[in-house]
Amino acid sequence: MTVPDLSPLTLSLRVALLSTVLAAVTGIALARFMGRREFPGKSAAEALILLPLVLPPTVVGFGLIMLFGVNGPIGRLLEDWFGIRIVFTWVGAVIASFIVSLPLMYQSVQAAFEKVDPRWENVARTMGVSEWRIFRKVTFPLAWPGILAGLVLSFARGLGEFGATLMIAGFIPGETVTIPLAIYFSYEAGRTGEAMFWVVLITLLGLAAITWLNGWRRKTSRRRGRE
Image (cartoon, rainbow, N blue to C red; front, top):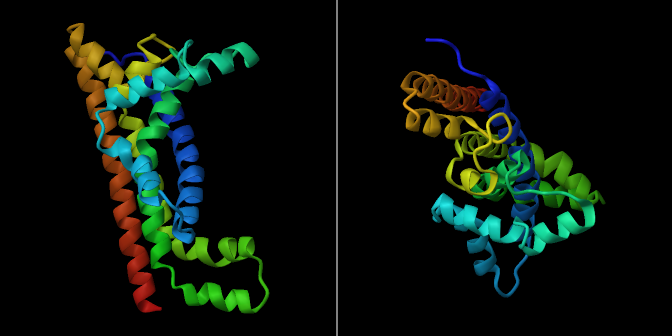
């Protein structure tokens, strides 16, 4: 079997990495804010963050088209003011992967922050340390295992995103074709060998990510047990 064009691999890695960075920054900020604040509508706001977990990806993609399409409020603003188009570009794939992976990142970080003993933060406050420094030097290091788990899960989710990506980015060879899209359209075109190549590759990538995370967790647990 000849090796197919590898552009879906490079694009998938780029999309997954960028969407993971966006999900990490947004997820950490949201988890920190939601964990420290009580306000009317907090439950509804949290439900909105987690909604992509239960919605079909095509529904997420449809919503993104309504927002970022040429007639959508954000899409029209970006195109009129900056000449930027999101629909049918690889940037659209990044946004789709970001939206579907954000709930995983948020849940992982939220759980990690809840496990941090607040007494350590309070000790730092009694010493006059600023909240930002407490977060960087105390909270973040203690929550790092959970944050790392969220990063790996978000990356794997972004790598495997299909439905929402197809809706907003479309199928443009060499420009918006990620591995899941390559699998689907290769099989539809009767190129079963090519589809199998991508299936095996993305399966190995997912297994490698999860295996590494589990191994790192066990190693960290043993080290903490010895300490």
